[in-house]
Length: 369
Image 1 (cartoon, helix red, strand yellow):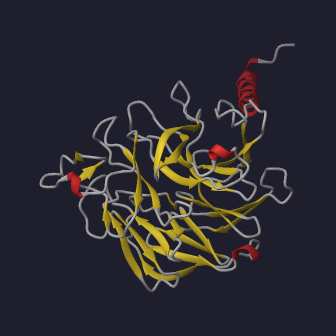
Image 2 (tube, rainbow, N blue to C red):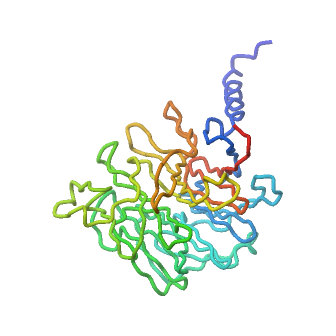
């Protein structure tokens, strides 16, 4: 018996939903042989920075949702089975850091602290502000934070524009945990939203998103290395190795500034950066650096939307190449935007996707192709 015509739209909607639902979010993703990627958690809108607590809780910041999530896999089945919202109503709590059981949050112009957070997931405390103020501009105000080997909290302060010359911006700062002291450690950084210290050194490696509206292929995005404090990386005067800015470059010699350790393709938008130190991946992957590329927003043909990796040769990134791709499909559609990476105690990695609010787990399973 044929369905009545008036039922066809609903039937088509149902069939479309079933077709969509049957496709796993990992379909079409490509990894090296032996690696498996699986959904670890869904329903985490705007998932961005991730940090791991001592009791196995993964805390997740967001850029546009104003929430901080807490997730945990208590069953050990490779999927998060508990989810809490431990803070809401914030501005853009992209950046998270953990120290001595306290969760630190970067919320545009302020830093907050949630004490003893893993013991209060059901009834989280009110965030406590530190006595420090940061610029309140929302443009490039989604900050990344992390604790350095010196015990200070580092935070990026991006330029509040595409390209401009403004005192007190385009910096990397470090802040004491009580908020009483704040120092500038690097300048000339348009916007960094991901950094990490290379294991066994005091080198800070950071991603930098280059300026827009100089065409599809320039300037490069960057991986930079901070060897000493007060280094200047060129913005807004110079970009990449030696590209003078058409508006602000006059009178500036690009050789006066610290060049990138690795020039990336323009507009790939590198965010999270991670040095792999686990034992689960094959030996050749240990101490490689991994970079989550969020993907372009205004390029005529999209680029990025992948996780890249590089070897470290003589202290610098080399042989930059894909680790996970397929989020950007041949027709230009996008199935995810990689944001940040987190290494779990078992050596697997988590990858956040703020586009669909998912978190993936990447593991190595010998013999898998």
